[in-house]
Length: 124
Ligand code: B9F
Image 1 (tube, rainbow, N blue to C red):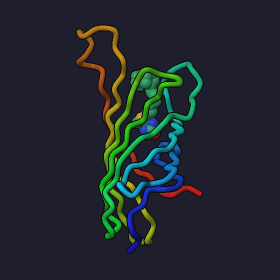
Image 2 (cartoon, protein in one colour; image 1 turned 60 degrees about the vertical axis):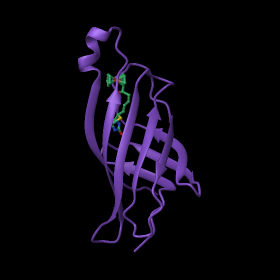
Image 3 (cartoon, helix red, strand yellow; image 1 turned 45 degrees about the vertical axis):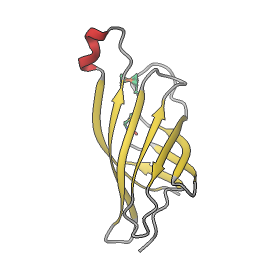
């Protein structure tokens, strides 16, 4: 079984790509997220990722990270997930996300959060 280390390039089921630069000894990491989808008119830009993973050696670590879409949107997304080794031995990340949209008024708070799931595999 491979140890769990998120360093490298990942691609999800939407075609979004994420690069994790380096995982520190304490499990913290930074990276860049290139979303394949957006619903703003502004051009999509690479967005900073900051996260933390467990350093379990069974290849099934849990992790979380935040994406700040600051260059083209006021929104923020957080992902939580776990790494698995599929039947073919390939690593797969199963994640759930919350996406917080900036709303103009507290009255709109109820509709400000979206949620979903993404599956990532190694890219390149
Ligand atoms: O489209 C999002 C956005 C935020 C405010 C206007 C546009 C920003 C990009 C989010 C990308 C999401 C997906 N990509 C991916 O790989 S993060 C979770 C998904 N996984 C439209 C209006 C308000 C929110 C969305 Fe917006």
